[in-house]
Length: 358
Image 1 (cartoon, helix red, strand yellow):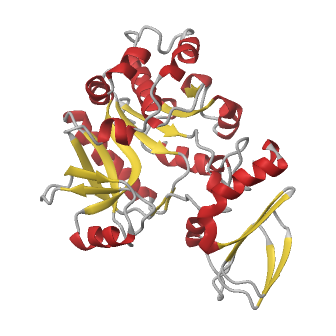
Image 2 (tube, helix red, strand yellow):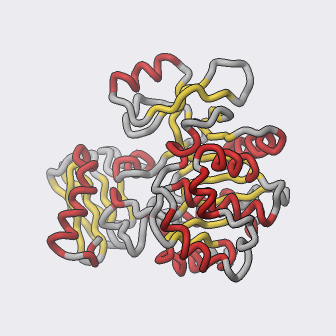
């Protein structure tokens, strides 16, 4: 394996739209959401490990998930954990990772990928990452992978690229989640991609971009690199990290930067952001019902998504297009069309039943 290849798996989120399975204590990336025998983060690690040595894969997560990560990823050591003492969005976390990696290897190129996405064609994914690594090793560019859109989805950000012959395209513009009319126009134009939040760049290029666009953050986290990969790193991060601006890598770096490029990809990507997106990935019966872990009888029932604790027996009659999820002492029953309300439902559950349920 190429010793200059590194990766950072972003695993700090709570995944509140997957309540009640995903909670603050045990978020969705640590669950086997599709019933494959592996949690999402385990699947992500193994996928990346095909190209990147396990010791060069860092996990960025919240302090409270330290033990979960070490338990689920036995190839990982404490030294590979980037424990965020405060929630500050993606930019500070990526700068922290880049400084730590650069201190180990100034020639490093790094992949940044979410821990909780699903990818059908892992071979194609690895080919695309290899292409990106090679481009970033020899050019001062910031790369993102753009998913070929198959519908005018309004839940994703879009990337507009310059129409050119080369495989890797210059990015012209980023657009946050558009309305339906705009999304349809984007699709019709043929030069827009979904923003998957998967990035590749050299450690030196991304640090240079931070120095240009977020210099205050560099001043907080870069002490000349003497502290990284030493016994003092943890204390330094605990003392300084919370002072960083709460900003995403997209707003802070990718939108203002002039050297951003995109590789259009198509490897069967799903961000698994909602119960509906999980339903879309699962096999269905003749009535379009999808089931994870339960033993079910459906009577006059179509288009339902059912997930329970393993082996639970469930009978559903006369219900169409509902999400039915059971976890320990909680049951959620919600129309699929209202799945975006689950964040608000979770807030109400917290107010009514207390923190331990969310």
